[in-house]
Image (cartoon, rainbow, N blue to C red; front, side):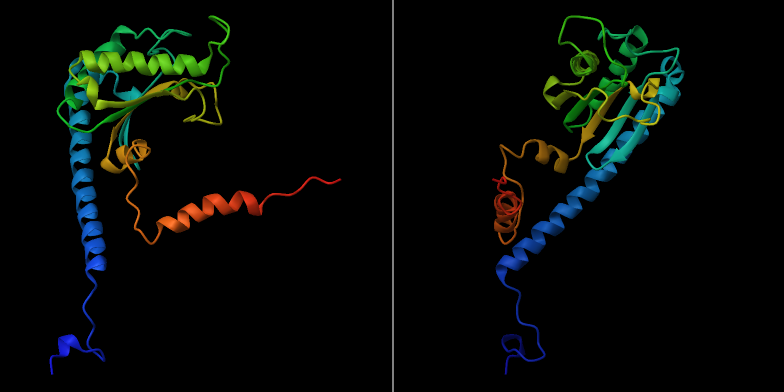
Length: 231
């Protein structure tokens, strides 16, 4: 008797659909590990460039690198006596211009797409035209930083998203006026982060059995929480 074809104590063959799902998941995990290793190499290269470049090493205290869910994050923060921009301005200071162009040259060597974020402190912006506040200022500063990265050699098509977040994500929430809250974040995105940004155009990788459940939650939940007004 061919035991591979029988039940009992011998495990039946795995259906082709399960094999395909398993192989796809395994491939994705391998890609994520390889991508994480490349981003770590990039982090080491940026840190080395900052250490060994005499012109830039003096600004190392203003540069913070860390790995996030979305990829490698490079943050350039204000210091009390050395701001990246004049107060209320989106004009890049000369030292910041040099720094961004050096970073742009390094990032030009990797294919990853970028997100640029501008952040302000929580002080109200009183200058300028009516309706222009920290949201607009942080957006303008992020876009000005994008231009300097491109001037340094970064292909413009590598930039996927530029956004201003005002004071919505403070580094020091207990000190909302701290200079450290004023910063530019450059996120070298991993493939998963890029997919999430492009999700409206590209459907997410959801296993067929899970998709209906996600849709049901979105539809049913608002109905279940509805309370009719008292009469």
